[in-house]
Length: 461
Image (cartoon, rainbow, N blue to C red; front, top):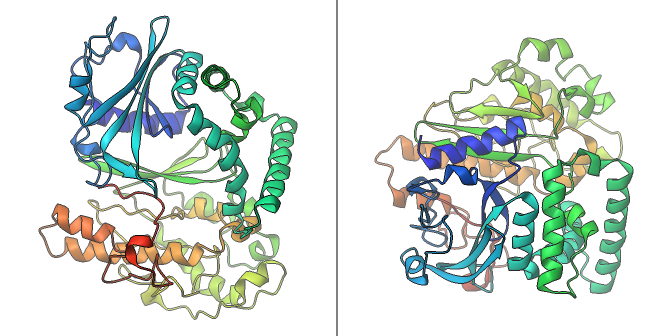
């Protein structure tokens, strides 16, 4: 197994089994995510962390290939800036704690956001505390930005509050942060955090204080940044011959799926019973995670609940959920649930009864696996039926289903008319771009000059 395959496998293993290293190597891209790739004793001789399978689009990280060879991880340093130039990297600094090192550099071929600031790559070694300390030394401004601006603004993004007054936004954000801090303490959340994470947070705090004695980074803010938010995520893991979508909720040994469904909807008779769920498990549940592999067989019996359930939601009157269903008039059509069907022909349609339906897995090919921002595994879908979740995500639910359906059609049509080239896939992945001939209004409803349209996120190919 090469290092790329090992990395993919290891990330999936950590998610499913909650494995962590007490001491190791971490590579951070842009300061965002840490990928422990092994113990120092492994040396990773001659291996390559980023290989062809992790190449990014030419606007992001195309051709990035950082070698972790014996010279790179031996002492003292043997790498000069000339070696970094070979990989389009510019060395910014190197830091030592005993035998543990931190290196930061910028990638010369990629810029991000409006500023087009270059992407930063961080390399750290040592214990969790040492890794955190080195990250604090190298990235104090970025950590401070997360602790101050991210903590303040993220709640507005979650609940779709458009507050533009800076003083009011600052005040509300501060109050919510204090509530979050109290909740973290009251619920015993620190007791649920592995010791290694606490040590890394302590190191991060101390490193930031060393880099900037006047930093606004605090331990409380770092804990809020790293707190559990009740938000579920989709993780895509792929290898040349197989792939999977990890649908992750909160960490737990058991899960009562039906507890997330409002009682009156659960009692309507249009939601699966516990016996039905027990008899139609399609994939194992472990630690809050269910995995949809490329050969996953969706239990089609769940689709039989959609006609009566969606019809019931048209007449749902209990407030406040009924407020979200005022535009819901959809009449069930089985063709909309077919392999190439559309629940929403455009992202502006309202044919989804918020999350109270079971979205179909469109693709049924073993060589094709598609993910959007919603759960497809039926049991996990039940977890998305919490009433509060509808209000948090209501602005995006219709769009999420449309993007899944549109991308599904684009990719299936390409697979039916080979060859599928790099250019073909790149064009499909940009189907929502302001430069797209098909949907130029998706990110640009005001018809602004294309060069003035700011699209958040990145495209990876």
